[in-house]
Length: 411
Image (tube, rainbow, N blue to C red):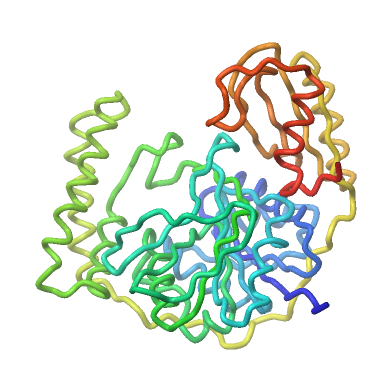
């Protein structure tokens, strides 16, 4: 049996130190035998990383510019693993994430792999499998949720991976010059996916490699995902056009994209989340970004061919995966126990059920354990029956079975 590939996990963070600490606590619980963590962050993020109990095992890199592609390239330069995995600071991986995500790299032709992303409720999927063409048009791809699917270049469409749950061979990233800094935010992974496809490399979709993505607030969006600024989206579309769309076709390509953004803003107005004046302001920022993107420098990224520093392995926690269960009125005591056992190195899942039909939610708590809460008769999977009467014991067993493979719980 071959040795596991050494992996570097790159986390880019800006203006979100508390989210970063939660992300790093989840990353520290990964059950993969050989991985390191590279944190590329602003001063507040670096300080937050250095507060973690495992800070000596982290590689921290100070980076203050608002450009996710440049930050990722800096992380790649410091990465000493054969494969570089990426996760956002407002996301948390399941403990099995790298175990599943790295498995397809046993095939030499696989250059890139991407997993599934759970939404804020911890149940629904925010991202599954999609392909994308050179006009930036994506469409769903049907894959088996229980196995790896490898896609080889075909028909000019690339397999789309999300920057919060993807991995790429380091030597491929070096050859392709990493992420294009012209994409300061948005379309950065899309551009890389297209270049990987055009270079003739295969991409794997790994549904079992799961990450939970929180969509934390940022200068570009509110916590409820309502836009605050569209400048970078406009700029990135202009850069994308200059790389992939013939000049004579760019206006025809831009008009539907611009209209789609306006419709999205109007839908927020109808829902009461924006005012009409916000639509005018945000569309003006979109157009300003587009104009700036037409002149923005693109390409020419610099990624170090060899790692800036030696591989710095994270210690793998050897504690068991355990499940605590109880009624909602027992939550204070059970949360204390969950936090204590997580601090002792166990991977803890706490299931709290109320005598209701409330929908279930799953969260990774700052204290380092997973918490699922909802009604004894309520939905977890959103396509299940609205109400399903069952005993406490059978419901707990059903929910443990649902997460056992990702959470690495022995039944």
